[in-house]
Image (cartoon, rainbow, N blue to C red; front, side, top):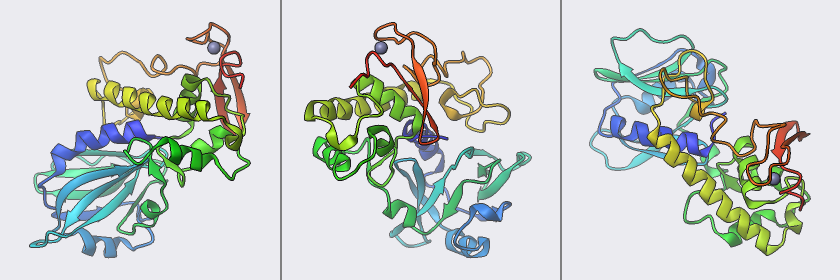
Length: 284
Ligand SMILES: [Zn+2]
């Protein structure tokens, strides 16, 4: 599932391709991804609109749309779900398998491909309204993180993944930031000392920024037909070295040496998700 860095890299890729374009048509091939509206309602809502921007909060992406002769924008929210891909192609190309929805943009089109149909396209803002502060925004401060950790009995890793408090971290980056900050994933969030919270805040910023920087330099295959190599979530890229595992400190590296101390990285199941950590570096 794409997390904040993957969605931000995608946003930066799409924005220059989409801004200024007009939505000339909208076709839904998998009605399940449009909800709660009907495909017809969404069609009526987006037809003829121009795209003014591409926004992101946490793992959610949206197109800022404006009706003809109107400056007022409104968001069309797109969540990629588990396996969704969003990319621009020439409108005379054959549509790929598992295409869920297609936005006509004249000679080009924006394709939303979603093999598992867990994604969502909507004009409703309920998902965005429920999101907590974006982990990369200026509003994500140490007091905000302290606040997110208060009044809960949850372990810190579980709390970090709660999108209603901090938006953007999923299982991969929660593991990564905890290792960087040398915090045990199993610590009670509400019992973390200020020094640990500060270290985590810093680790979140650094980890996300480094990954976005890396992703923006790589040649990525956004259309992602075929097998994903895990490289920035998108499809495998011919000629691109597989860096999917190399870019992580602990995630997916069970049994390998911790990059900080050399001890073996462990994996345990925590709330049904794999938690990767170094028991030596992340003892407390
Ligand atoms: Zn270690």
